[in-house]
Amino acid sequence: MVVADSIIANNDNILGYFDYAEAVNNPFNLPYVGFENDCDLNFIVGENYLFPSVGNNAVRKKIIMLLENKRLKQSTIVHPSAIVSKYAQIENSTFIAPRAVVNALAFVGKGVILNTGSIIEHGCSIGNYSHIAPGAVLAGDVMIGNSCFIGGNSFIRQGQKIGNNVIVGAGSVVVDNIEDNQVWFGIPAKRYK
Image (tube, rainbow, N blue to C red; front, top):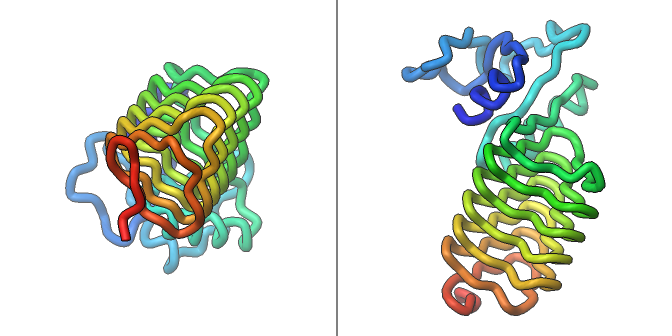
């Protein structure tokens, strides 16, 4: 819903949405197009774009790869209240939610979600298909790997390196580097084994 609201806030039109089933709650009255795996997506032509608004990193990656294989155009969506430096680099199929901040020299990979009120400080790098939850703060020069989930209201200290497929629990304070495929949480954050 936040993605649809952001598209509408940018005065863009939504032709419809794909999902595994038609939504019971559809406050924007969007046309249901069908399940993306069962549809002929080639009807998307001209200046029309697709956007994978899926929170699950693995599912979002799968859909983006499907769209790329079909050579369909994908969009990046930035809510008008977000602040994105002109010196930041944002890759395709990324969503930047209301009041998110992306400062100078930050790099945000493909298929990333920067959720409401998240702060990405100068020089940070976020790998493909990662999700930065609401209110999370990445201090300067933080490096986040691919397919990570950084929980809501968490804080990652300046200069830390987070590997691929890492989960940081909500409200955590990360003061150490984290290797691939680990789960950390707490204040200060510790590895969950």
